[in-house]
Image (cartoon, rainbow, N blue to C red; front, top):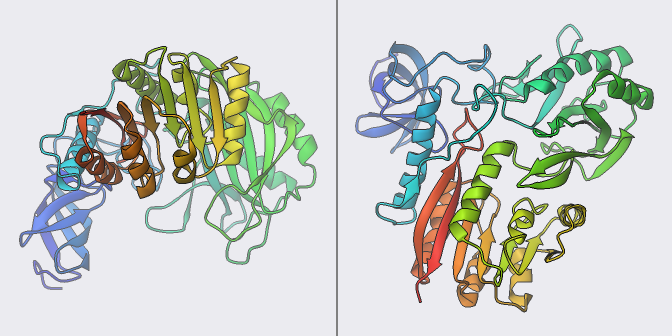
Length: 459
């Protein structure tokens, strides 16, 4: 194969100069960008061009000639194969710096915001010796069967649908590792058939584990096709006896041909269907399929930053759009006259109301429905609006309604810098000033970055 031409299969030498928002290293060849997984800024390497377009290419690292200064040895022995983490080969201090830079670039390039006020990720105070490992409070492992018939659990290898069997995971809470290893053996011994997506046969699809970081309470959820697991009641009771922190065993029924992990129906088998977690000075009840940020301490750090920057007052009305189970709504409601939460998922709204009842918070209300439909009929003008939309960002109708309502202040929580930049541009053009973008690292060892952008009305 000819070396050094802009064509698929060519071997080229690159120096990596940046990291992309998808976590890949970026170098240049013939003045065009080449995206290289598993690379880090400063690496000098031979790279095979595996996909070539007129304006960019994707490459595969072939030989590392000189490592960049931020390259380290991964903590996990399968980090180069597993699809769970992207950045275990990158020093954590540089991960934080790279995430801040990813947000800056998105706001400048997409939002047209010169010199955006983007703060470095929050420092997280945690008792863990390494806060950037062992942080995940929830993990869902795909199940499979090896060539020799052994039940396996793990993540899919990078760029493939081949399961990488794991007995422990260094980014999940250490207290979950014994369950991961041992429950595979129990499934094997009970003869429960593992689901085969090619034939849509078998039963057990995923093993999902969730822990309350502050309480130590654990929920075990088996995702199954129909729930037909002979002996599950006796086995669930045995699990509760075996693991002191385990408070509940549930089945989730997912009968569909889908990549989605959870189905719509949850069935409690033993114990209770929720765990207790302490967050923001409150007690929250979390179910196995509840959306809750996987890094409890980082989410609480961002909550504190939001409360501090917004400086909420007792006479104000707070609106939390896309509120989920009220993770932020409920702690912030204590500072204002009234808090209103809007959320499309009915089950999440039910849990938000339950958590309000548990904590005796009476000045908050939650409504289920699409935010873009609920906002125009709100009937009240909020002083402060908190937005926490999905990765696709806010529906355009939501932005337009808010520009008509003109709240004094906005806080926009985002997990995707590109859609944040797009929506901030609309707010700025509509008469708001961007005060600060506070980044937070909710997913160490990956390229994902969370932000809270604060806007002030100009008139």
